Structure formats: structure tokens, C-alpha cells
Image (spheres, rainbow over the protein chains, first blue to last red):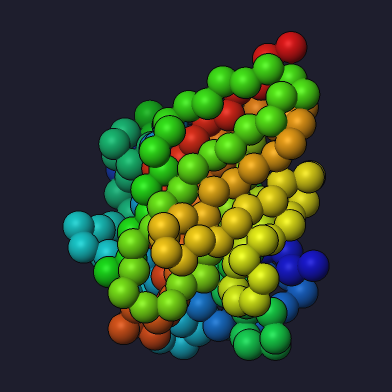
Length: 117
Length: 116
């Protein structure tokens, strides 16, 4: 089945530095990728949606200059948290939707636990 | 806009007992419905989905759900739970939303706690 690889699974960084999270679709081409943020014991909050080769579309309230999303190819999307602060600490999850091949669905990465100290 | 309501934040149940996790959705157009399970510090795993056809959908790990259009519900059931079913369960909806992205909108989640 469809697999999405997300790296790193966890990262600790110092306040003020930037962190990049990668999301790769391993065995299918992802036309659309979604980035979510999840606070402890809460649901997933959609941050942005990206199509390959296009600028990402951010949800209301999400700072696009802080959370940079690049979807350079049909198999890779990256989320960069710039100038990270402790309040950016969270669990980030990516999801990919495949090109229409008769299968409709969303495949999720395993998530990245970001801790900013 | 689409939305999902999961009425129960936590459902405690004894092992081998049946369980139902409730999900109601709101949408003005046709929708696709999903149930996902999340174990601690992991991503989401698809349990089952309803796209069209039979309203009773069978998924993995013995779970099933029934799409009820008149009640706008998509409740998840399992006839006999195991300790290993303890996890967070999310109901989600997607469909035409005017953006072309068909974003997946999640409910707030239900924590299933299975005890011996």
C-alpha cells in the first residue's frame, strides 16, 4: 500500500534556530500534501495544503513566513519551522493524497515531535 | 463548510466487550468519511472509509462503521475489543469544498480505554 515517510521522527532544537521536516511518498505520486499540527491530547489542526510546483495555501491564523512549505516534486514536501520558539513545540504530521488511480485516500506520515528549548 | 463532531472524548470499556464510537458530520455536499486510529507518538492509520456504495463498511482489526445519511452519522463499532485497541480514534470527512484540495477535516478524537 501507499507509504509516506516522515523524517525526523523527533528533533530538539534551540530557540531561534530553524528546523526542516521532510515528508516523502515512497511508492506513489502525491499531488497534494497536507501539513498538520497536533497539540497533546488534541485533534489534528490543518496548517497548510500544498500542490506540487505551487505555493502552499495556509489556513487562517497560520504564519506562512514562520512555517515554510516547499513541495518541489510529486514525492517530496518539506516544512521548515523558522526561528523556532518554545511555543512551536508540537507534533507535526504530514499527509499525502495520491493522483487519481481509482483509489481515493490520504496516507499519513509517522509524525515529528519537535521540542524547542 | 464541513465539520465533524465526536461526542465522546473518552470511552472506557472492558476487554471483550462491544464498543461504539460516535461520529456525526455536517456537510452540504456529498462527503467521504474516514476513521483513523492513532497510537502514542505515531501517525494515523486508516481503519476504514466510506466513499460510496454499501453503507456498512468493514475495516481492519475487526472494526466496522455504518454510514447513515439521514442522521448524518458514521459510528464506529467493534463487537469485542482487545487491550491493544486502546488508542485515540479520529473521525474525518472530506469532499468538494470549493478549494479543489478536498481537505480532510478531523473530529476532536475519542480515546478508547480498554481494561482487563
